[in-house]
Image 1 (cartoon, rainbow over the protein chains, first blue to last red):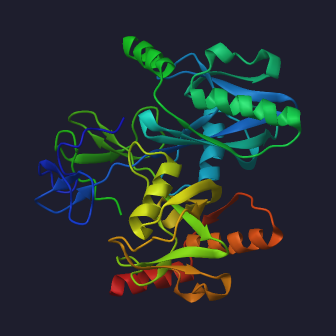
Image 2: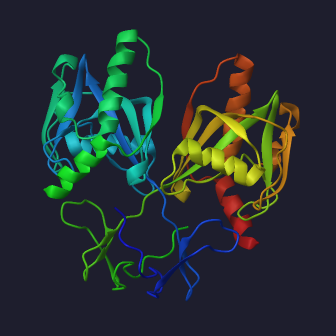
Length: 194
Length: 194
């Protein structure tokens, strides 16, 4: 969630919501210094990291979805490329050194204003270990993936595409749009209730 | 450019730059209300729109790079999917109705904190017309593309990949990282001098 836009970050004047000249939708405008504060979707970058036939998952140490399993992923930082960000997140969350492969999935996650990108990657060694945001990091065979304990829909979709493509013997880019659903709502309610 | 982060947008208190607990880099923190203001790269979405063998370009009516030719593209809006954003920008800048195809290029543009995505698309009719941000919209044969008057490197790279793939008879996803260069610096100097 972005912090509220009540005041201008440039001059601290109160924000007015209105359509700027030449624009076609309301923006957070400062009538004192003229700054316009846009809100844009954020990128989340991560990896499907493998070792032989196994895939690397992290059990989350933080909310949302603490205790659930995820692919290593996180917000892209300023000044960082998407591949470099995916590599950094895999190191930070799983303590894993990887060889980064091609982009594999891209999902628009509309209800949280995010775009999720997952790259394929290969582990370079087995000296991985949970980072601060993970309780546990493990390699899973396809048969052992905890489908009912995955943290996010983009994670389960990426894993399903991965195993399907692997069984076909050819990988391609998969993309899609994730919209609000009863399942999303149930997860949000559970998170709020914590 | 993002507006300066001098004051907290939630409570108007002065911002302190420091590393929050559990984080590993300095963030814009508010010591009054506890808000943390992250800065993340923004997504720019657009299309390589074609009609038979021709590709649709717009001559820019606005800075940066006014008068230069570009593929229709712009910032992804909150609540919008990347494909939907590419379609909207093509309508807003070129007045063009299109059938959206697959993602074609993705570039990390590090010096401006942007990620550029271009989808392939086909024009549905010839009733296109410049929007507010365009001076002119035209279909170009490959031989007539104004390579020296293209607005951005991601536009020229996307067009080069498009014509190469088309001549090979097969399209694939292309990605890359755009870093600061002497050419970027020259463009920036020219823009600043305007």
